[in-house]
Length: 74
Image 1 (spheres, rainbow, N blue to C red):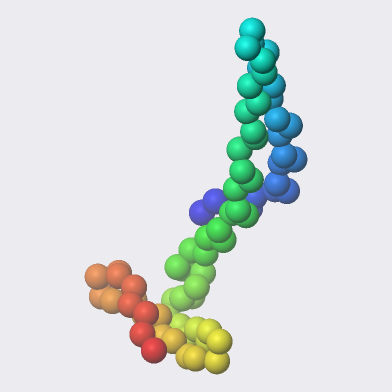
Image 2: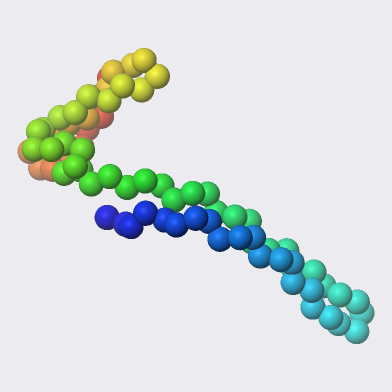
């Protein structure tokens, strides 16, 4: 499991390289989206074989198979 990410780093300023023909400006990289939350299945299931997840008013069932695979159904 990953540790929670800290606040995003401030954007980098553009870098300008001087050349005989003029200057070339390199733009900073685009900011990356916030880190995706990671939840251990042990924490999600808490010793049970299935959990119900309500999403936009629809109830889904997430269950573990005997082989440890996950199946999500409506």
